[in-house]
Length: 552
Ligand code: MCA
Ligand code: AMP
Image (cartoon, rainbow, N blue to C red; front, side, top):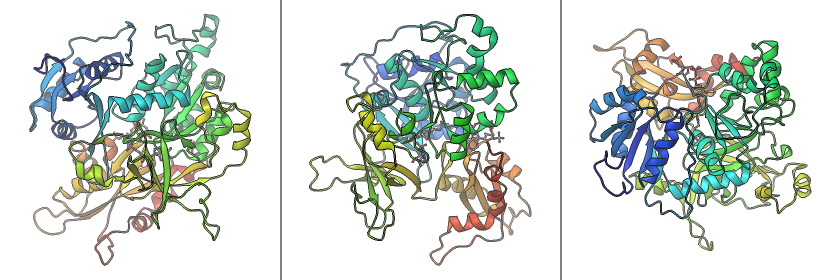
């Protein structure tokens, strides 16, 4: 790899973009990039070329590594109008294939400028490169290992994309640290997941010996003990379970019993109570553990391993090594422990701010954005590290019963991070311009920018439309050009999808569209997006899957 990049020694913090399928090869590639002391920039094969072009140019990648499967796509990318001219290394053959090598992770190795860079949508209109130096990745993995107790006995079924924290750190880097085994089953498909869960519990498999721990060989007979996904995935699993054969229904229910599926985690978006409850019922008592995270900070808050610590609607406590605080939205004051309720008895909500070794280093080549997202430490604070402002709003609330469970458990146990403080509950985001759809973050401004670049669009507003299945759906409200050569009388959702398909990755393309004569604005020319959703998408909200009794 170093040779392919035209260097000797190591790659000293240069960026290496890589497009490799979710597989053993992905793991080898990312570890090799880190070992070359380079910054790994995962490129999602699902992205259209213009979005990949932006990432390659913005990160100024020196080298692109591609598996042979994506050779055509990466060649197309390199032949596009790139400002940078990275070298290309196509992996000649599939590395994995039942081969399992033991990898030693050296504790003391100097990782130099090695790291991971993930692109995420912010409120500005183009995604930002979030730089996670290797020490941050390690701190995140160690924090999760302490909290969730990954172990060599764990077998994690991996269904998530690998260009996000959830798939790359929680479900891959962290389990690697503890020697857990990871089995890829991507892209997510509910039937395939149910089949895999069921495999060791079908009568035929039961008669042969069931493998319950990782012996280094991937086996369909191995019991899945660890599963982490977004709420939309659980919603899909619940919806399709009813369609399975009676034999499969029973085998899958056995597979997800707490005794078999040690840990089932939900995150990246709010977990609706009906989904959580339906999963508990189906699994006869396995409660989804909810946690809160962000590309810039990894995982920050989490409920505990103890079932009684998986409190409905809560995202728990600050994870090991994470320091969290709430800052009052109205006054800017820190809401200290004991000040969660004001003098009139009203709950005080605040922005979640975080610091600690798990926080990212910077937005790549964007010191202005980096500076504006951090708040200085208080003058009387011995720790001068600034706080990252998440933009997420929460309250802290005392939860009955949690304390007594805590006192029963030994405080010296590895679960001592589950504080006896009150628990965090997320209320939503400060900005209406960040949309979370199926766990994917979308900037309304970025989609508006694309819509406004189309000649037939005169005005556009992109909004979050509540959805039971997706959490939120991306909704577009547009005014069409009525004059000139680009005037159009009609523009359908289909026309929109067709036009945007080659420009934006599928989840950013609005799922619902309304053509209106004008978009209401206030005296300042601003659109009240909450009001607009209520006015224009009232039918969508009313008819949404969530409001139907068989939602999940
Ligand atoms: C696919 N589509 C979507 C989404 N995904 N539309 C809106 N939102 C989405 N998330 C489009 C498809 O392109 C398709 O469009 C149509 O919706 C239906 O596709 P379908 O095949 O049903 O969907 P899918 O491809 O199965 O994807 C659903 C999914 C996927 C499995 C839920 O979105 C997913 O893997 N989400 C997880 C993302 C994730 O890992 N987030 C973590 C970010 P068409 O019909 O036109 O083809 S990290 C993070 O958030 C922080 C750190 C944290 O806390 O974890
Ligand atoms: P991303 O930029 O894709 O990393 O998305 C991070 C955002 O996802 C956070 O800022 C939250 O708004 C949202 N998020 C993650 N986990 C949760 C959760 N458990 N509940 C509610 N929102 C969440």
